[in-house]
Image 1: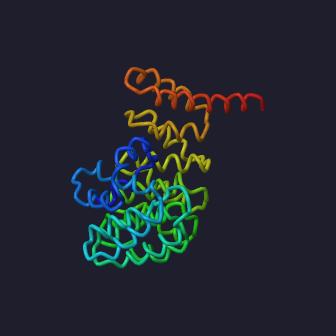
Image 2: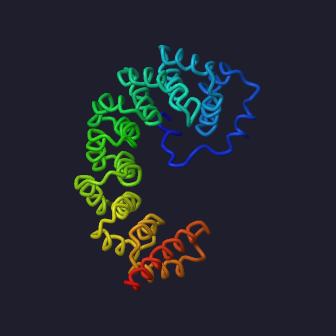
Image 3: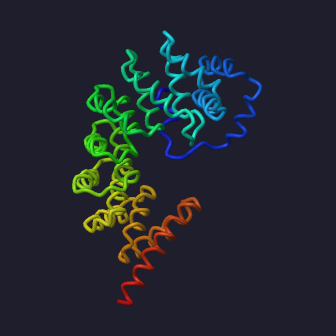
Length: 291
C-alpha cells in the first residue's frame, strides 16, 4: 500500500470526523495502530489524522521512524512527512532533507513512498534525484517518479514526463499524461507530440487526458479526435471536457445527442458537465456569427 493515498486527484474529505475518531490516541499510539492496521482505508485515515495534527511531535516521530531498521516504519515515517501540516510549508525543508536520502533506501517500497512524497513537496531540488529512476524496472517506482515530477515546470522534469507518458505501465503512463496535459501550462511542440501519441492509446482515460491537454492548448487538429470519441461508445466525461475547452460549435449536436441518450444513466454532475460544454460551444457560435 505504498502508493495508496498518494494518487488521488481530489483532496481530503471528512477530516473533522476522522480526527475526532482518533483524538484520544497519542501520536505514538496512533503510529503503532497504523503499523498493525490491515485495512488500507483505515490505515490512511490514521495517516491523514497525523498529517493534520501537524505539530513538532509528529515531525520528530516521523524523523525517528525513517531511521528504523524496519522498512514498514520507514514507509510510515515518509508518509507522515510527505504531507505533514498539509497545504503549508511549515516543515518543507525538513521533509525535503529527509525524503531525498530515502530514494537510496535498500527497500523498493520505501523508494516508492519517498518519490510519491516528494510530489507533495514540490521543489526543483528533487528533480536530479528522481531522474535517476525513470527507467527503474519496478513500475511502482516509475509511477512514483511521475508523481514526484508533476507540477515542476522545469525542462528536465517535463522531458522525463514526456518519456514516461509512453511507459508500458498503465498507471505511470496515465499519470504522466495527466501531468503533461492538465497539470502543466507550458506549451511546446514536444509536449503536443507526446499528447497526440496518447490519442491512440488503448485506454479511454489516457486518450481523454491527451484530448484535454491538447484542447487546453487550442490544438486545432485535436478536433477530429474529440469528434471520434463523442461519436463512439460513451466512455466518460473527459472527451466532453475537451470539447468544452476547444469550444467548437460543431460539437453542439454531438453533445446534445449524448445528453439525450444518456440522461437516464448519468449522474446530475456529469449532465451538468455536458450542459456547460454545450454552453461554451454555443457562446463560440454566437461570437463567430457576429463576425
